Length: 217
Image (cartoon, rainbow, N blue to C red; front, side):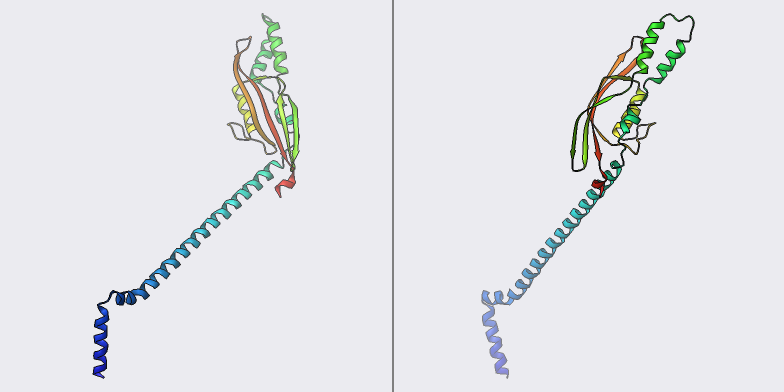
């Protein structure tokens, strides 16, 4: 028996001097490490793909919710919004009241000038023409062009822009029944009237979009 183990010991020492022996000895460890590394790489890739898919799904869901809120908001728009809220606006009310008060004075000198200005202020209202109308996928687009410039003050301008842009501009807040109004042209010029009053002359164009309730589904 001792002789047998002695033979094995000598053979071990003999082969231990060969590089091939160490290669064969370490081969199982190398194979295990390579396998583990491959598994780690595969799992890391799957985790990255999973996280990417989750982000894409979350982004798609947020976009869908945003679209649904947008359509739900504008599908409630009033078809008479321009008539009732924008074309009905009164501008330069403080100047108008001032002229009306001045016209009551018995010793008034420039009565004709004031009466002419009052006549202008009485008719100083927004009016639009519908130039083109497009309907597609339950969305109606109308191009609205201002017929003639109007005059306003800073207070009037804030109210007008709050209504058109559908955003709060102190002290004004937007209305819930507003259609989507997209400004395409806006011209603002400061001028002085014949009565030496500083006013703002406004001329604009915008697209009015109306969404049917079917789009909000």
